[in-house]
Structures are given as structure tokens and as C-alpha cells.
Amino acid sequence: MLNQEDYVVIKTLKQHGVYNKDIAYQLGVHPKTVGRALQRGNAPLRRRPKRTSKLDPYKPQIDRLLSEGVWNAVVILREIQAAGYAGSHSILRDYIAPKRVLRQSRATVRFETPPGRQMQSDWGEIMTEIDGQETKVYFIVNTLGYSRRFHFWCTDSLDAEHTYEGIIRSFEYLGGVTEAVLVDNQKTTVLENRNGQPPRFQERFIDLATHYGFTPRACAPYRARTKGKDERMVGYIKQHFFVRYRRFDSWTHLHQLGEKWLAEEADPRLHGTVHEIVGERFERERPALRPLPAQRYDTSYREWRRVSWDAYVDVRGNRYSVPGQLAGQLVVVRIGLEDRLRVYADEQLVAQHRLQPTALGWVTVPDHHAQLWSNAVQVERRSLSVYEELS
Image 1 (tube, rainbow, N blue to C red):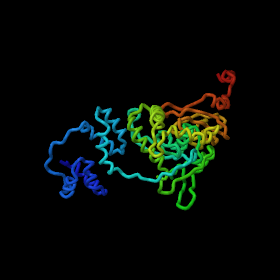
Image 2 (image 1 turned 180 degrees about the horizontal axis):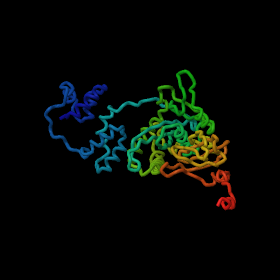
Image 3 (image 1 turned 90 degrees about the vertical axis):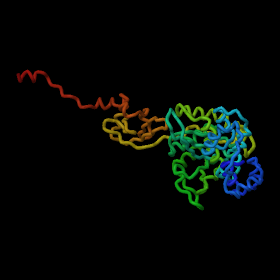
Image 4 (image 1 turned 180 degrees about the vertical axis):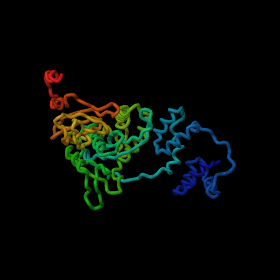
């Protein structure tokens, strides 16, 4: 006998054009039972005792995962097994199958590219626990168009500097550079992109492309899914990596587990579209990648500062010393993503500091102010005889 949940499934499947006999087959009932339920407009009021299943205690957990967008049965099985489930995989698949019609369609067209031709870049975000705190994590995913091998990097910002850093880290992880990089129309890379006109890229993104020798490409407006391979990887990471790992001791710990997961799960997987092991397919793409440049691109923040008359620069609420001869001059400060401060005068590095909170005080290198002390006003010296004459 049907229950209310079965009726909801029947009604939904019928609205999607599924035949009664196919609905009945999925629910394990007679087609006439399905027809009577549709005519009646609800489930039967009388219910007979429902057969119990090993899956019953875990259905709320499964439904929660489905509501969070986790539809991969292997991932869900691993989660409920960790909670004590001892049943088979087939029972789980039978429970999920009728619900799949409720999943939002993400159908799109895939375009295959030759080895080394293109890398697709995109951002995702998720809430997870880092050092005991619920934290919003942004992760950039860069996927090779041919082999589907990908790399991702997590951070706390979506700005241009972190975007460029993520692309560079992926090039370094993959061991080379593709001919082109396809990005979405985020302002960190694209200034303007109108239909029928070539896109205008950010000047610094063009500088990055020139340094690494790739051609920047942008998705057609309102068609971000033209880079569907990478869009798919965003979901793959959310539904696999961030389901398997839910707590991290630190950002470093997160990145360590990410690299481990890429090597142990992502690279050895059999890809459903190309029907090959991703790592093995990448070995054919590796020779087509261009070599990395000899010098790494500097993704640091770049700002101007006026040196104060006591030879300090103000950066993020604290003060850092520079050589005394620069007092009153304009200098360039570069703030690395690892919180390293570098100060340049006439393109020459003149000072380096590790950024620290204001509560820890100003950061001073004694040698920077040696000249200031040597040029200090000298105190006039008088003979004691002057005072003896007045006595």
C-alpha cells in the first residue's frame, strides 16, 4: 500500500511525463495502484505495516545530503557506512532512483579540445570548519580541457590577486601551461564582454597571460556553462572532497588534505565522458603543455606609500621602518598573500618585514634609522668656567 511519500513521487514523476507502468516498477507496485492514486489525488488513508529496511534509520541523513546537492551514491554510501549502515549499495540506489527526477537539470553541451589547448578556470564557495570556526572557503578550480585533470586551491578571498595566484599554483601543480585559459566574466579578469565584440580584459590579467604565454579567453555573456567541464568540477569537489572532509585544523591542513585527495581519488578516477582514467589520459596531454617561465609572476598587492619623517610606512594599521634617507619620499609597497611586506624605491628592494598586528607594536630594523641618529641636532657644549664667573 502506498504512503504519502510514495504519492508525492508518483505525482512528480507523472508531471514529468513518466508512464504509470514505469512509475509502478520503480515503486514495486501494480500500475493500477498508481492509476488509482492519481485519480484519488492522495495516498490511501489505510496503511498496512511497512516492511522495514536496513536503510530506514539512515534515510533522514540521505535526504539531507540530497537536499545539499550530493547525489553521488558512492559518496552517500560512504557517509552512512561511517554512521553504521551495514546494508548493500543496491538498496541505497533503489531509494535514490525515484528522487533523481527532482534534481535540477544541468544538461549542457561539451566541447572537446586537443591536448594542451585549454584550461578552464572557475570559483566555488562553501562553508566548512577551520580551526574550530565555521568559515566561508572560496576555492578556485582549474581543469585541463583534454584530460580533465584538475587542481584546486582554497583561500578566503575572491579578489584578483588570489585569482592569479590560484591559476599560477595550478600551472605549477600540472607542470606546464596551456595555450589558453578560459575564465568567467568576473571583474578580476574581464572588464567588459558584450555579444559580438571582443572582450576587454583587466590589464594585470593580460600581464599575467603575457608572462606565462597563454591566450586569455572569456565565456560568452550569460553563458558561463560554456566552460562546463570546470563547472562540473566545482560540484565534484563540493560533493566529494568537502563531504569526506568536514573539519580542518588550519588552512595548511586543508591544502595538505586537498593534495592528498587529488592524488588518491581525483586523478585515478574513471571519467564518465571520456571513459578513461584521468591520470593516464593526462600522461598523453603532459607533453603538449608549455614550460613554466623561469621567474614566477608576482601576485602581491601593489600600493604607494609616503614615508613619514621618522622613516616609517603605514600598512594595514601598523608601522614598518624603512631606511632613513627615504623620509618624505614616495615608495611602492608589495604585500604578499603570505603576509610578507616588501618596500621598493626606484624599483630597488629597500626593506622587508613580516606583517604583524598593531597590538604587537611597530616593526623596526635599527639599521634603518642609523642615519637619522647620526644627523640628529648636536647639543651645544659650554665650559664650566662660564658658570664659575657667575657665582
